[in-house]
Length: 520
Image 1 (spheres, rainbow, N blue to C red):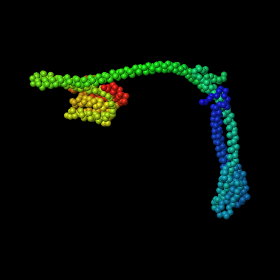
Image 2 (cartoon, rainbow, N blue to C red):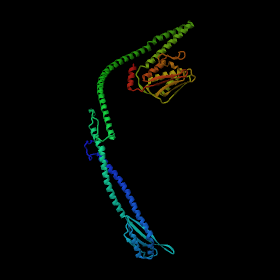
Image 3 (cartoon, helix red, strand yellow):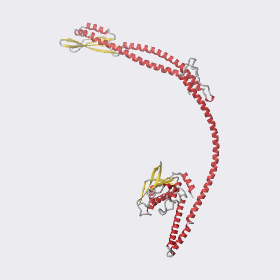
Image 4 (cartoon, rainbow, N blue to C red):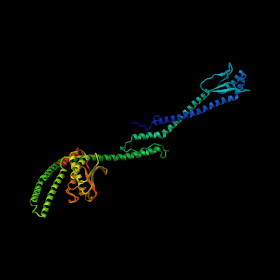
């Protein structure tokens, strides 16, 4: 963790000061180097330009006289003229080379020592005018040295760097001193105050010793004001947090008491659940016994009534008047209706009894097989089933067969008055949920009576129009409820009906609960 300096820290111990001094020196040095390099480059170009100007003057001042002396082969005069060229500033070597054409031993005169480094070489063609025209008779070579140029530049570089370095260092120290007096010393005091700040002790506000002549609201004053507001807010927040902690401690104690009470109530609830489960199991057993009684005890007197009616019809059919025979027919219809109601009641009771075993079922294939069986009962009718392929559902296969049988029978029955009956089965998206549907183009019903649709023994059509006991859809609704799903219908009179239903994907815990509630 970084440790802050105390208010009496010296300038040498100021880390920000050292970094500031380094930054100022570095930046000033870079600026000085760039400016010095630019100035030296300009001076170098100027000096080199002066040397090149002198070399250009050689051609206009000396070349004509050298041409005449070389044509007359006057070595002393040539040397005199070459000495004059050599006296020019910067010129270190001069040479004259006679044109070797048609000459066995051409003349060569050299003054000075030719070198290869830091020099400028200039060659001049020596021509002489004759009656035949200009004739090339030799070459004048002049070499100028740049050593004096580099020497002057080097001296100037040392002087500039020395003077600029002293000036940069003095300016940097002055800036560092001003920054320390105006900013750094107060930052150290602020850091010392913050390092000893304790929100639980309600500290005094932060103040800076700025002197009597200070007035205004500069950046440091804004920092102090902001920190004082922050410390005030922290103190208030600390008080609120302490109060909240006290309240939380009381809530924790209350919650522990509540948890103990909940555990006690859960123990009581588990006992009551076991008691209610036992009672429910007994009720299921009693309901199973009642269903058995309905299946056997009620059918026996019904069969006797139907037997005596048949005997009376066989023995006295010729003696009884038409009205009496009508009564016998009514008795036959009543016993048959009673038998159908008993069968329907047993179907309804079986929908809520027995264990529930969910398994994957091919919805499309199973529905097609059930329709084929039901279709054979009325081979003379024009009935078609359109079903989406490869639909899957997870349900109890026994209950699923009972469910689809009732829905398909319902669709086949209520499309009896259609010349071409069409039934559709599949899956669709209904209000954001994947649901199955069975749709027909049959008689339909009025939606105002839809709440009676799934009630046992409740019918929306007259018995003279369509036979039935009103148990099929009630059975369907109970099967779907046992699977944790729901079913609803949409229809209009003479425009067919659509039944939508869905299943809840159950796990082992759901099956255990369903078997406990519905098992018998």
